[in-house]
Length: 234
Image 1 (tube, helix red, strand yellow):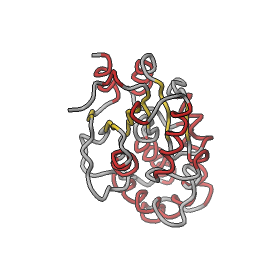
Image 2 (tube, one colour):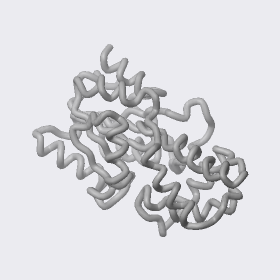
Image 3 (cartoon, helix red, strand yellow):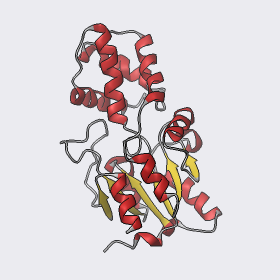
Image 4 (tube, helix red, strand yellow):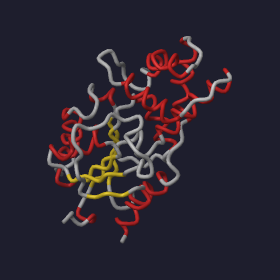
């Protein structure tokens, strides 16, 4: 059985896809470009193309890499080519919305836990996300801070060192995320208790996120952040 939620001191969070509506923001930005060009964009097709283009050896850090990704996927989507459109996609990240339940749930959880952000996004983008979420974080680690992206264990080790510096350990952490590939699998391997927020529970497939080699059954499983906050207060 999973541990009592009250036993944790920290909750660490994936941000893009768990708290910020990454798929909705990406598709909306691509559709805005398509509307101006008179071209309709199928959301699931766009996410599939994004996934294939994003995870390549020549990938840059996110969201700067959206400029390159746009150039790779625009022809297949029938969208206009040109670096200016990729730049518009990158800049549009600043306007990506949080899931409707994210900010309120984080505010509730912050009353009991120290909240730590762990994001593969660059610091400039995370600062906008944190503002959108109501600045709930005790600490934050971005790809600029760690030099690596999840699921690299080195990202998690940086967070463990921070927690140990505050006199605690990984046993005091509940790791919360939507990505099986980036978070749930590796957190299990590193001995963390984890919580899967299944944002795509009403859709098939993995959308814009790479499919894991194997599914990891989480310690906790919710389809929303609101449900996690409710459980923590129960």
